[in-house]
Image (cartoon, rainbow, N blue to C red; front, side, top):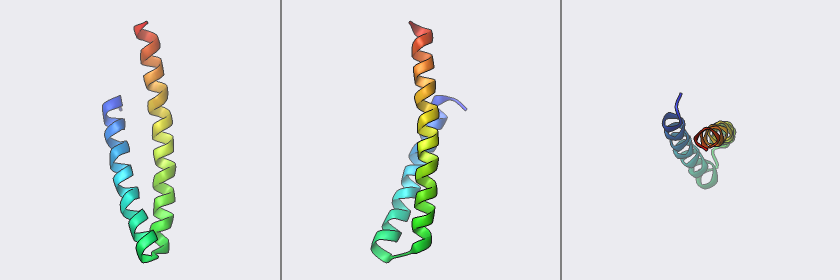
Amino acid sequence: MNMQQKFNQLKALVALAEEDMIKYSLKGNKTAGTRMRKSLQDIKEISTELRKEVLESRKMKV
């Protein structure tokens, strides 16, 4: 998966997490809180991978 695809996946996960955050905080939906935590963990993992790829590509260009 290239950087653009990972970034698009990251944006989609943030949108899903936002929907679940609204359901959890405004409606008290406990399962939405669980889904939100899962989405946030996935966001963290993809962000870390993307950060490493950016750093590696920067090193290769120098």
